[in-house]
Image 1 (tube, helix red, strand yellow):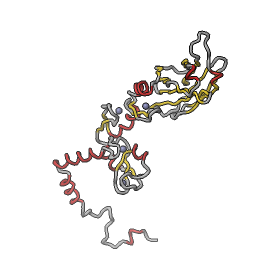
Image 2 (tube, rainbow, N blue to C red):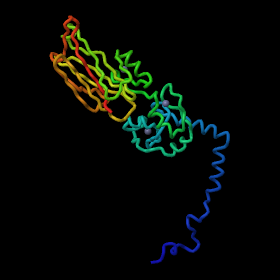
Image 3 (cartoon, rainbow, N blue to C red):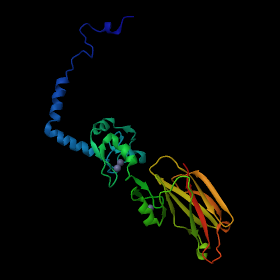
Image 4 (tube, rainbow, N blue to C red):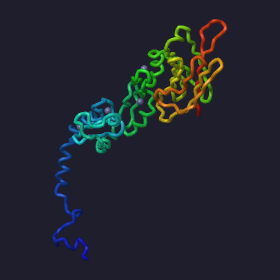
Length: 278
Ligand SMILES: [Zn+2]
Ligand SMILES: [Zn+2]
Ligand SMILES: [Zn+2]
Ligand SMILES: [Zn+2]
């Protein structure tokens, strides 16, 4: 069989060697459309594209677009099943825009953070940014990580135990007046703060049972392992588990077993314990 090119007519030219009739024109057109006065306008418009039209935050990582061309940021894309503007599928990456915007310096989208870096490096920064908003497990509001401690203290009356060390037990006595003892009751939350985590422990009495719930907030993705205890007069219970960032009931016990009575007629009490494992 003869090679394919031998079948071509003698005066035909290969696509690669054929002169491109648009080449000169394109160069001229490009010069026209990005003239010096225009380029300032073009850059201004590109900068506007850096802002997500849904959350109004700066685009910091992958950019997605729908078939119509609406552009949204990665965070909004995770929360939307389809384009919020036209309901089309929104699974296409806008690589061209990502490459163009890659040369811009952008500001961290978190409130109060003044960090600026190249667009492509911003995602790395936002993950460790100390102003990253964390979700409060009591009110579900987003609170900047540098303000979360004050928020828990002021808004949710939390008692904070700071700088807890790993593998060391921390104990708290919870008193219950006789009046409260006969009703459903939730104690003020206790927060155990380690270098990377806020563990939130809350104890309730429901139907003669004491239950201990735990939740944590953190920028870390690794699930921490911890142990808790409830200690009574002649009874103690204990649990070790991988904490989850949702409210989990980790211990329950009968209140009759757990409550300690004092000889001096003071309010009865019981003890809770918490430790974080390495
Ligand atoms: Zn967005
Ligand atoms: Zn759309
Ligand atoms: Zn930041
Ligand atoms: Zn809150």
